[in-house]
Image 1 (cartoon, chains in turn yellow, purple):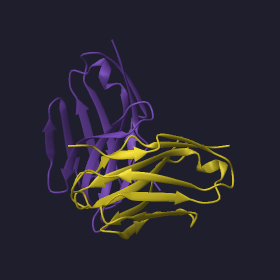
Image 2: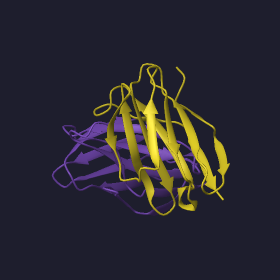
Image 3: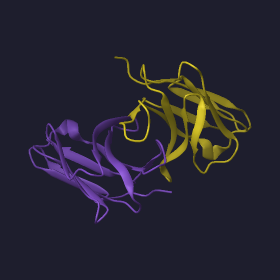
Image 4: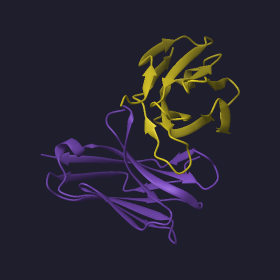
Length: 113
Length: 112
């Protein structure tokens, strides 16, 4: 069974640009969550999608957005990039969310210069 | 905001020794999960313990949960150099769907 796949693995962008990250969950999993990991703030929850609907949202500005497609694949978008957006972005998939294990992808390392 | 607090922040032991990491959290939870992360890569799921469970085992891992003290511990027995990694606990607050709140993590170094 294939794991969670995130693309791209590495990305370098310039301040002010926008970026789209992709996540393909484990087959059959309907919940996809996104997390940001930085040395200063640790792992922080961005949002969760379940059956194409955003079910939970963390405390991030509106520049951070996401969506989920009918095949459960998810994308997150960050507009008007800032230096502080440099981070490891992790995607997690789970069967239904809530009481089930969450499995993470390898992450996308975003560097904003 | 981070709900979990891991203790210690860093731990250095010799191969073959046991490693114990502790996690405390603040609110009622649905379940608690432990993850391992190697050098800034993805998180590897280790074990999930539900709020109505007190202890769980998986191979060399033993997890305990004390909901009255809002704390959990992860014990790795007979540690190996390959266990060197950061370990995180993550809580899933009841009724909040899949929204994991992570602690700051414990950095474990196993010397061979």
